[in-house]
Length: 248
Image: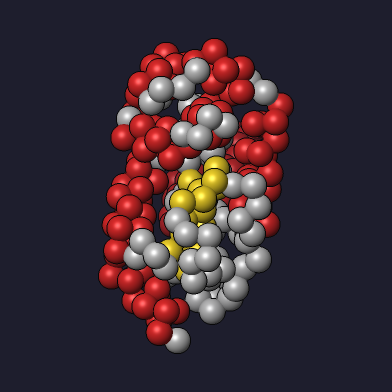
């Protein structure tokens, strides 16, 4: 506040000289009144400046984003109680390794993960089974209808055929695509459409979504290998985990 130390004394000094050299008593009284008014106005200005300065500091503090709390690390040894339930399964029933996948048919990362799952099942045809569970994310408009399409196809024995179609065309999902895909894989299209709209199909999707939430699934795709969440997603990682189970 340099203004306070320089401005006020200068004004007072100039006026004081004027009073002493040029003014009569009445003029001096009027000038002193003016000095008092100026000093009062100065105090008001300084108070406003101080308030402005305080306000700027508050804005700066408010504008700073709070530090994000670090996410707790996943325990790689924790075993989640995720059951096969009524979800669709591919692989031998007595397989020693069960991979459960929570996924979204409109998710690009899930589409990429489908290739990883195929690589694993091709490498371990007798030892690994895969369970697919739907977890359609709310910001993917076609994810829920796609989940219903896969289950409706499953009612005619073609779940995995529709599964592959959906992931191969995740950018083009929609009502017309679902009907065309159903026709392409040899479904009764009228029954397929009726099943898609049925409460039974919706109930299975809803049940799988609840399972995902209970298992702490935060996004898609999320995998569990014999109940444990692998800390990454690659064939080398999964191979190491599977080999450890088979040889353990």
